[in-house]
Image (tube, rainbow, N blue to C red; front, side, top):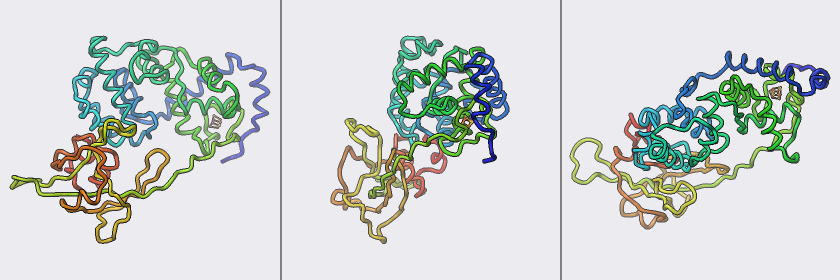
Length: 367
Ligand code: SF4
């Protein structure tokens, strides 16, 4: 990174301003100009449709933008309005969510859509305080929807914004009452006349320039107001665990079919009482992850939260299934052409896609 002016040199002028209005005004203007010139072209950008913003914000929670784009397009094509979403069966909503993970988000979104259809005439409330009464909409999502769709002057504080504000102020993790100070600072820093763009600019800046590692301080629009400029403590990376797991790929000819795609695959539905991905469909799990080379159909890596799975997929004959697998939930032989529209786990979809068992048109869009 090019050598930057010492933070202390700039602090004198900033301290004179004593966090005053003029200083923040200049930083806001710099941030908004940077955003206007550099914002990424994303399918939900420019939408003043609060439903579209809501869907995108829920999908983006704990999920990378690149992973969301295709899913968002497919979801909005199938459910273009709150009422369309409200009218759909949950299984179909989960199928469209497949691959995004954290399925509770989809369930809450669906539940909230039904409430909006029933109690609000299908129109999402405009005010952030009203939005927060809906299931799955917390302070962050309510502020994002209300500011972007309706210009309500309420600051968004997600992980990216928190990191930017802490680095600007020189605050470190673990300091007392940090969250409250961040929220107060975010509220003061917000540009009330351009709340939607300002909030998006802060989130975009945190996601692209002020990244957790190697921040791009030299081209940062907030450089003049930053106390740390890359000289901050970096949180240690969470240690990933590794785990081997075996999956059974059982295929059989579809009974009574003479033409077309006549194969079916054995899938298992995770029990409703499971805390992780309840109700989703997956390949049966093998009792042992040791799979002989001649039985191995595929080996894939799959990360779920802090675990990196080394997944070995074994071809299993119809008669061997019971002996080789652990029965966790309800099993069903599913025609391959129907499998793509079931709510599959991300791993099941990945395996069936890699093996080219999902119909081509349905590989990228879960319908
Ligand atoms: S100057 Fe660097 S550390 Fe400070 S806000 Fe900008 S990118 Fe982040």
